[in-house]
Image 1 (cartoon, one colour):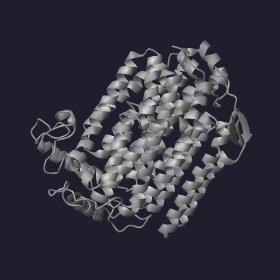
Image 2 (tube, helix red, strand yellow):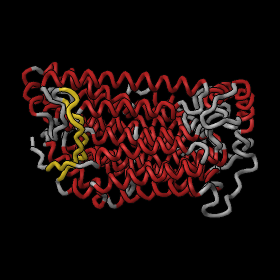
Image 3 (cartoon, one colour):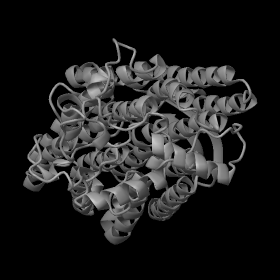
Image 4 (tube, one colour):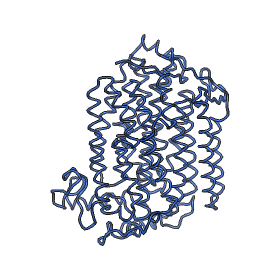
Length: 590
């Protein structure tokens, strides 16, 4: 184990980040009847949080950790927030992408005339504030508290429109997430009993490594509880089912869930467990890296196969997220320096690409009412910038060179080679093929097909990227045309929520009115008519005219970050932070 050489400096900045979020919640609530003021407070809060996080980066790179100590909670447990290297990775991603998500959300919520906008923006600020608390937590207890606050803050976002389905999805999310938190609590107790300390220590808590050698089974139980609890939000199978269900939420929330805060909090928790609680050497010594790697590898392959069968665009992206998060878990489980580097690089790499994809999906829905891949033939003619960004994000997810996903996956692949893990190499290669298989049909239909001449999707039913050699009565989920009509209607009944009712921000739904409006929305795709239009998509008429600038600018920004990360990774601050973290954590030789 290599002892960290970081100096600690008392500072209010790690704690102040969360105070900004708290202030934003109050100010947004007070501005309920003034939408422009409310949204201004949202942007001020987002920019302030990011600026405060960024201000600590130079010191962290120089070896100084900013620490806010709020005193002792109980004997042996301090209420401490520390801005160390690992926390800074998650904090930079969360706070930076919050700025873009906030801008995009204004365009989305206005463009789709969403209800309960005050609550939405308040809970958005609360969620990112809680995520930053997770990032800067100095020990397992503080992380757990912020982790549970994140769960509670995101529930109103998942159940945003208050329809029956959104409430059910919200309850499902709460049940999974709180159960995971309970497991983390059990793991924390076990670690405290074993080591007498739950403070994050680079390379692992010293006393825990000693005790683990004497009582490996108890140490294995503690590791399983911690990693398993965090794996719930990371979407590792078989505790992943909440994640596709949560797609009922508005698209900015989906981006928050899948790229910015929630799922990253789970993956980050696994990273803290491996690197700062047990340490790579102790994880290897108690033999927990292998089962964790098996779970991650299985999740990558199985969820990719599920993604192939989804016609709903957000559902396909949801299963893609489940697979991509397990790359982080797999890299952590391999324990080698190169694999750890790849795992941590995948936190920002996945965030940039996946947020791009969700922002594109939201733009398609707001502007055209498009929810299904089968509605997208030729759509790039109508929304060329959006679909170009989507194509680049898809290629990044597949690990194509010069894009962000390639950098992180390449390091994980080298980590597998470094450890002589041929099965890991096979999983990574197979997953790359599956990524292409479930993203290529979307790109192909958008750019190279027309409403009058297009294939059934996905390619499970036809040649790779080409025309299907099947009757058009066979549809995307492997059923028949009649099944498709029934399933599509059922899916619309489940997923379409009415947002056209005359509602106050904090008001309540009229159930009968909602039901009638819901039926109307299903019939006309929110006023957009038949999809895809039989006469083909009309051109947008020029750059920047396909959607509002409030939505277009953020997705172009995330696309740019994705390209920069893929072409100049060693010039991004993340790379330097990660090199230091991995060096301090020590290495496990194969």
